[in-house]
Amino acid sequence: MFNDIEAVLFDLDGTLIDSAPDLGAAADKMRTDRGLISLPLAEYRPMAGAGARGMIGVAFGFTPDHADYGALKEEFFTNYEACMTERTYAFDGVAELIAQINSVGLKWGVVTNKSERFTLPLTRQMPLFVTAQTIVSGDTTPHAKPHPAPLLEAARQLGLVPGRCVYVGDDERDIVAGRAAGMPTVAAAYGYLGALADTERWNADATIVSPASLLNFLRMA
Image (cartoon, rainbow, N blue to C red; front, side, top):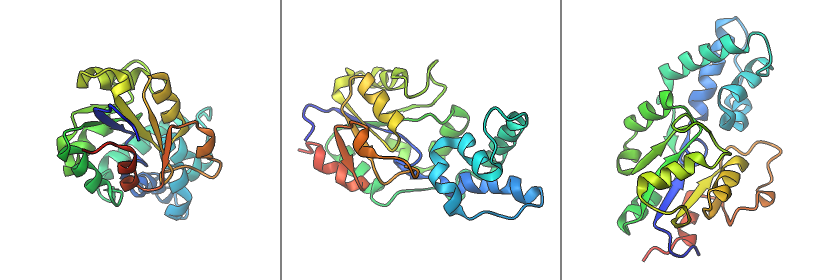
């Protein structure tokens, strides 16, 4: 149980929303546009948390040091902008979790490495985020996670000391950033973990296997 918590901050992709279908579709269109066979979503999903780097890696096997990577990344971004809310949805239990957080007067918000180019249009189109009191993107501050700057900015926007915020994320960098910011941390083990992830080694303060199980760690009354 986390005591004296006044806000819950969440990573976005893989923690609150399942955006893998749209991310995968944006990358797969690049393949089919080139006459390559389509790949199943199951191949893209584990790398969805890595954004363009992960999707291009699955689609073409290219890393960021490849000569064509820059052009492919911008093509991926263009494709993703065109489809980013077509197949994206909140994970089961997230809407109920946010409703509970709101009902007891806790603040909540998002801290993501997704750039504002995508974060702001996406969250504006999804009713889930109407009550979010801060949304910090990967380019809101000079540093992205695992640097603590985005989390510290979210706490500043909420008017809270960092230790009164708990941070929930599905990637080790989320836990590293939260700990560096002085926040209690929760590993979301239902997210885009990838084949090699071991949440037990992340040193999070708690681990959850579903969004609803976060309630077990919050003092809700």
